Length: 88
Image (cartoon, rainbow, N blue to C red; front, side, top):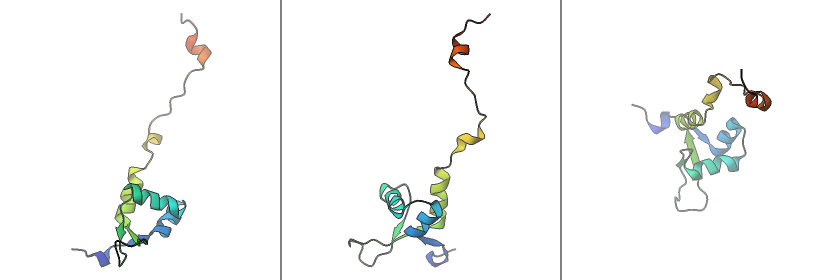
């Protein structure tokens, strides 16, 4: 059985760098509940939370945001004129 010490954790700036976004964006993901994070601050009621994101939670977040439409075949629509032309 693993303990919290065995799990890989990341800081908010590390997550932001990995995702190539601003740290504020990563904090918005946490605030909205999209990205699960743990506040390890000494004073949980304080103004400065110290967020840690488990690697498994980051992987789940990224998987939930994956664009799966790229695996579907691309349908190229007909030009409007061809679609409106009478068919024989």
